[in-house]
Length: 126
Image (cartoon, rainbow, N blue to C red; front, side, top):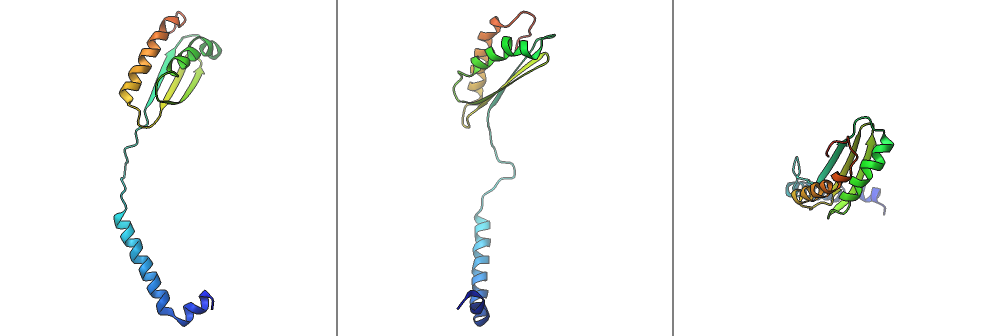
């Protein structure tokens, strides 16, 4: 006896099955916990340094790489993204979830401040 024949010969069984599934679905929905705007905090730090009149290649070697190397030693770093554009270097540091954002920011500031003495003259402080 296949499912189609069972449905036709015993319609009450199918109705009860659907009612049970519906009641379980409604019960599960009432137990579901959700938030409209969940608190997901992934700490990011962005270091932007300008050097008027510099090409992207000059920025890459003189500013972006030293800053990138300095912040890479910070605890909890997940990923570092760096861009060297005309006149500006942007280094974005993404930290692992659960990393203390204030501590990470202070560590990055301290490491970037250590590198500022080696930046070329004419560049602005990050």
